[in-house]
Image (tube, rainbow, N blue to C red; front, top):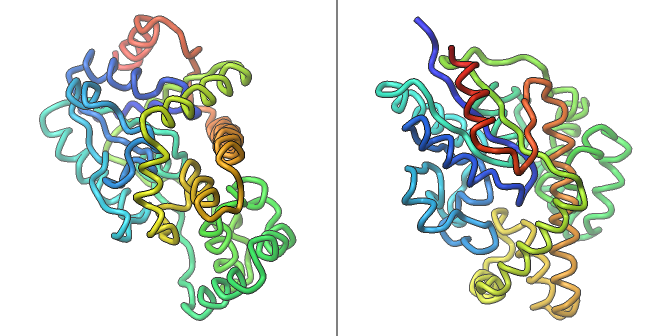
Length: 302
């Protein structure tokens, strides 16, 4: 019996993954699993580019604003819940679509998570204290020395990511990157990867336009509502943390907007770096006719 098919639509932010995912899901009468970790939270809408009401109505989406910034929600939680949802979907259809730019979350569903050692809570407390007392640069230098591979591949401006890598290193004596394996968990489905690409200047231009659109739609007001909770892990994300700095008078409003654009461009670059490692991805130009992509999928299912 042929396994059901999971179609993963990947690529950098603002490239058009949401639109393509909906087109594929409609063509094959199926539903979408969102693997965009920024869109999980119900309090964050504008700054995370949550699909519009029309887009959400066009096809059933799962894992869009399904949890709260006040609840702990890990990639492990997402892996477990997404796999359960796929099992449910595959009872009545032979295909589903996974859409997102969060490479770790895509891989968690398609391949399974790597197994990391247990962490002594004291180590995490020490790292949080070091962040508080010495600043993020102190932790960045430690990570660069201890694990240059991870230092190059993660968002080094995100203290949560740096602390996670360092707590693994301090607890085990081995770099975080050494626990990243190429082993794949056996899944009950087959995975087909569709990637969207464009020349870097075009991607950057689309990102700049998206940020301007977010601001016009009320990003500043949304960030103001979330500002009292700025220390939550879920809010350590591009589009919010820069505005939080503005609210604290650390930078001007114009500087905050430029920082959002710059940091989003950097995020897109890291996304491309992550996905390029996956040789199974079939890349299409961002404006490829949908018929070409649907034909490719159809041939792969024969």
